[in-house]
Structure formats: C-alpha cells, structure tokens
Amino acid sequence: MELQESIADFDANGIGLLAISVDPPATAARMRDAHGLTYPLLSDPDAATIVAYDVKHPLLRLALPAVFVLDSQGVIRWEQIGAHKADRALTADVIAATLAIAESGEVEPTPRAVSATGKSATTWARLKGRD
Image 1 (cartoon, one colour):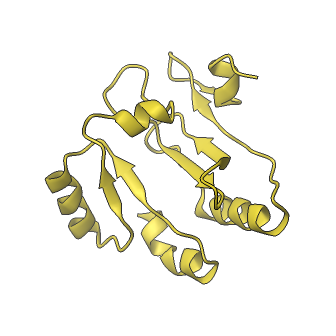
Image 2 (image 1 turned 120 degrees about the horizontal axis):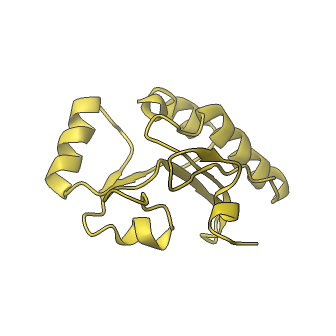
C-alpha cells in the first residue's frame, strides 16, 4: 500500500489522509489490519459517497480509484480518477498538489478517467460532459 509507505511524508507536510471503500465495516477493518494501515479506512457499503463524488465504476458496484484533495473549507481543489484499480495517483503528485494549494491556494488539476469501454481518457470532466 503506497499511501501507507508514504504516511511519514503526509504527516511531515501536515496532510490528513483517509480512505473510503464500499466494503462493510468488518471487511474494511480486516483490510486495515492485514495491511497495517494507520490512517482511517472508512466504510461506504451503500456507495453513497462514491455516487456523491461521481466515481462509481460504470459497470461494477465499486469505485474507480480516486484521490481528492480538499481545502480547509472542504472544497475539492484537486482530483485524480483512475481508469482501473492499478491506475492510481502517485503519492508524490498528491503531496505536490496539496502543498501547492496550501502555498498559493491554486493548482492546475490533472484528473484522469475511464470510458465505458475501459480506455483511458484525458479528463473525467470531458467524459462526464462537464465544463
């Protein structure tokens, strides 16, 4: 688990970290224990958060791998959404984006996404027909 391996980097930069999965609480707890995770692993068995953040897999009952960086007011300032389970944001990119937001309040987002056919696209927003 790359995030756990980099937890000291997050802590050193004052960055809070948590993960959310569709697994029930008992399954999430087993995963946390099995991987030695020291950050919160929240359970979203009804996928309400996944739907609210618009990262539900188009075919399966699970989330696309996604990272959201929120500012102190809870506003999403950076996001990266992967095309498949191995397509995850690099820890260095998450930390760099977070520090840029903290320093200047602005950062150029670089989201990725998946199409219905599973092919990567340049931005999640374009696929979703957003501005």
